[in-house]
Image (cartoon, rainbow, N blue to C red; front, side, top):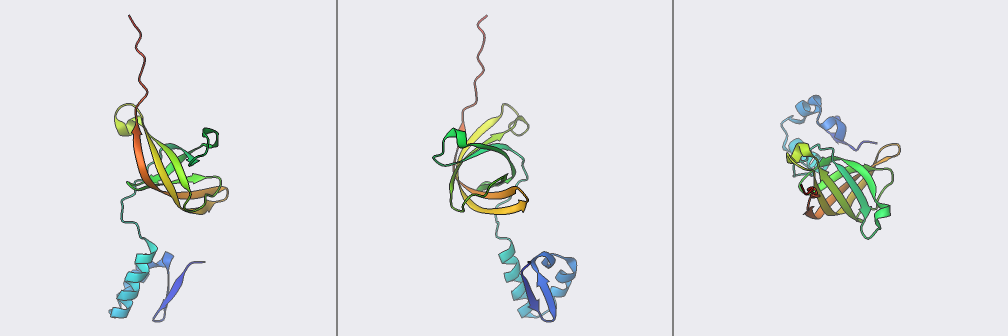
Length: 154
């Protein structure tokens, strides 16, 4: 159920707050209305870092889990401090993760680049049946050396 609030005789919900009708109604001119709206909007979106809608191939595993516990997935979006991706099972908030992101040739303008990240689960949310959206904060990362091609001796 959407969170809602009364403002005068109007009911506002998070989903309707961005709607043009509510935005027109919000400026009824009273300081109370403007204060309420600022607080309401501030709690609905706290991100300050730009997110990029990049579908990158990646593997995820719990920190300290063997490679057999590794799961392949794809990112939905990436920022300089985090990544959002989908799994088929939830992860506990605060859990440490090891993530391997692969930047494709289209981004690097050369060979694919692997980035090993140490991350922590910020939240897990049901998106659609069978898929769980995971937001992870990247705490450390390291670019891994590329695979060198072996040259044939001529």
